[in-house]
Amino acid sequence: MQVRRIAGDDPGAFYSFVAECEYGDVLQTPAWARLKAASGWKAHYLLAEEGGTARGACLALERRLPRLPWSLLYCPRGPVLDWNSPDSFAPMADALRSLARERGAILVKIDPPVPAGGAAARDAIAARSYRPVSSDGFGGTQPRCVMKLDLSRGADAVFAGFKPKWRYNVRLAERKGVTVREGGGDDVGAFYELLLETARRDRFLVRGREYFHTMWQELRRDGLIRVFLGEYEGRLVSGALMYVLGRQAWYTYGASSNESRNVMPNHLMQWTMMQAAMEAGCTVYDFRGVSCRQEEDADDHLQGLNRFKAGFGASFVEYIGEFDLPVRPLLYPLWTKAAPAALRLLKRRATAVEAE
Image 1 (spheres, rainbow, N blue to C red):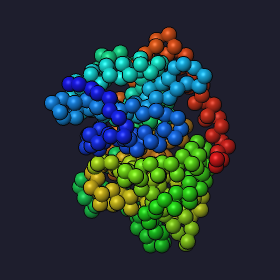
Image 2: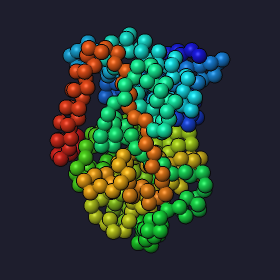
Image 3: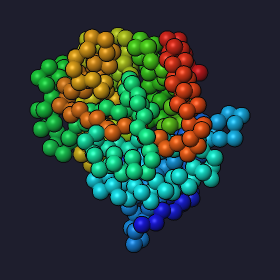
Image 4: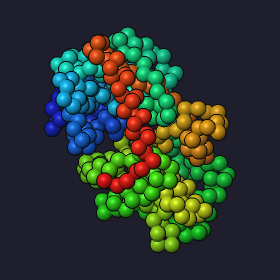
């Protein structure tokens, strides 16, 4: 198997493999690279081939460190391989190490969406000198624990799989006159305002307005993003973005108003998005991040997310997590100390979320 670098302006085979692979993700697409380029990341594309057939793909994003001659390489939700037979990781790992040395990178970070039971994948990663990275909260740079719903059963079976209270809430929202519609680019601003309201209430960080407009522009070019808006009595009360790639759909950036929560707009929003995903040919609906603690814990503020998403019949999935390859071992410890400190600083500022 050979791994070659390909140009970002001609990633056809790369995109096709990522879209069709069981372990593919929107975060490994050229559209995501275009989004991140707006904030200073440089994209590198690696394609593994055997006999003229694609066997693996990896988008490696490079970020230069300010005022320093070094960089970081991050492969969000990558590399994309058939992790059920992870032998192809070795040549991809060698290509990533070569790229990292060429670019003066301190480390290479990967976090493929492989379930935690994937011992063969974990062994293949460890064999190439990657180290597991401990984390908390959602579990890392990307959520380590998610919930996924099987849509392949069809709409009737999916709805029947909701908990009774969740089915009741969907019907309640409909009876009360809540409507959910799919929006367009002109609705991104209104969605963002609602997201800010949610962030202030629930005390979490949110990116600036321009980021979401750029996200819409770049991902929409490739048909990878949709926006849904819930309305009640002429007011916007809920909203969400949905990524779609191949047979997978991801719910992300859910937002809700402080008002009219008693008419359950978020339940109808989820059901509407699931139906849209099924109509698009998706067989998996990914609710994304939840708490990695499956037991009830009063001190865990993410437990509400677990209960809400589980109510739709979704199954808990824990991934194997993040791994770092220290390319410059003497500098790597400095990064492991600096990154958590920066994250703590951001969290302290999260109580004063404002629009840019």
